[in-house]
Figure 1 (cartoon, rainbow, N blue to C red):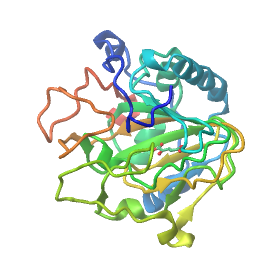
Figure 2: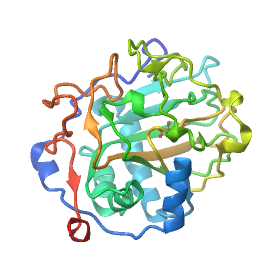
Figure 3: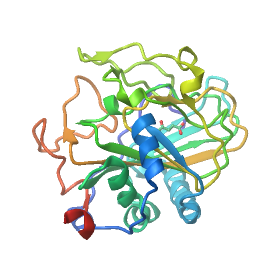
Figure 4: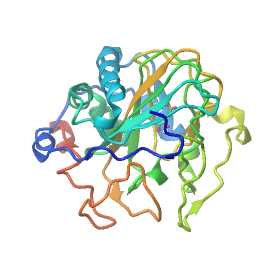
Length: 301
Ligand SMILES: O=C(O)CCC(=O)C(=O)O
């Protein structure tokens, strides 16, 4: 199960959901967001909502366990141990349609409706989910990065909704650089296994991501997390972790959402997830047959 030779998430099963599964998804429960939280998200590119979704912790833990126990039967697993042989860093994505607990979260939690409000968008489209587990003893830092350059989408109305599934002290939890979503700078994606840059040939991207210890401490947002806490952040917000050893297993379930202005784009290098043959030209909307679109009557008015 060690994956130090392979730098990325391996391709195992097809990531594409069945069209009828996608067609069934039209709307989801509503939850009115707090205006101050929306302002914080827009200004800082990140906001923590304490104890927002505690009822989803057990189902999502159960879904993640299935994902980890049988990783090769799900899309894009990446399983690695650190250079010291300790711990385990697992991540995987694009399995929401295969794991009922993930699908239930997407259709039965208020995540999509929250995404609409925080993005200020009339439309909400699910891009994918991404799950993480660092077992105790892991000393692999999540490299300082932002998500947009990894993705085959571009635009400003986007959001990740990251549900913490364990207690994690701020020393090992994911941390963010407030305001970094407002820079127009795009940094090379980095491999999570060893922090090295992807090979990209894109003039619009800079290879040197500022290191965590080079940015002003006062702009770092780090949080002591409890199960059910939720972090909302922009795809452009820089984030990562230290390499402090994980004391107790820490798991998280993140969903990625697209708003009105998000379009398909071709990057000059690998993307993650590596989604190919989408059948849309650059600048086109992501196909609704693969990426479910949500709507609510009050947003259609
Ligand atoms: O939890 C982590 O270590 C990384 C999370 C992350 O990078 C993300 O959700 O984009």
